[in-house]
Amino acid sequence: MSKLRHNQPALPLDAALFAGKPRKPVPHEFVLDAIAPLSPETRPMFGCLAIYVGEKIVLILRDKPTYTADNGVWLATTEEHHLSLLPEFPNMRSIGLLGKKVTGWQVLPVDAPDFEEAALHACDLVLAGDPRIGKVPASRRASKAMSRKAVSRKAVSRKAVSRKAVSRKAVSRKAVSRKGTNSSKPASALGSSKSRKKKSSRSSKS
Image 1 (spheres, rainbow, N blue to C red):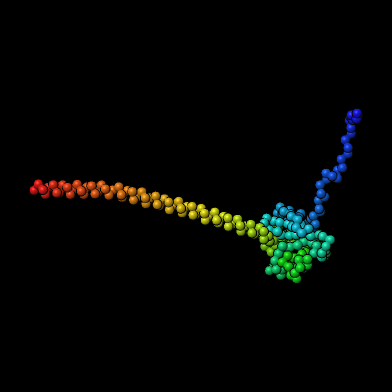
Image 2: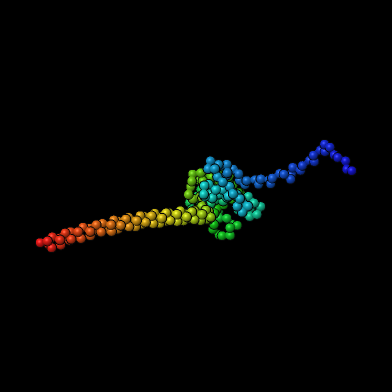
């Protein structure tokens, strides 16, 4: 028979088995600190960190071992604003890994001598609500359009229902009025027949 073991010490647990995945460091974290009053949201995107303020994506923070020339802070802007932004960001340029000569998005490269100063100035523009920085993603625009269509369809259906109700009321009123006219006709006919009978009796007596 096997001997019973009493007071067997618990085996030490390997803490590494229960430890969660290590949190990735936030690239250029000072940018998030600068726009913290806006309560920004962050989402991973293509190995970078996208920053949203409300419905708009405003910045992307990148620090990767590949395409290091494009590491830094990406500005969510469009070509029409490049000329007005260049005097404020003299080292701003298009993003090479996007594969176009001129890209709507622009990067403030991390290796530029004024990188931190330029990044903080971009944060100031975001804080001020500058319309040159920030885009509503296409997916959110599509969902907005779908919700607007749903609202308009509901409004149309409500109008149709109200019109039907009004037309039904009108039909019922017409039916009631017709009933009233039909019920009044026999009475007038009886009165006229009675008067005719009286006239004929008078004429026969005379």
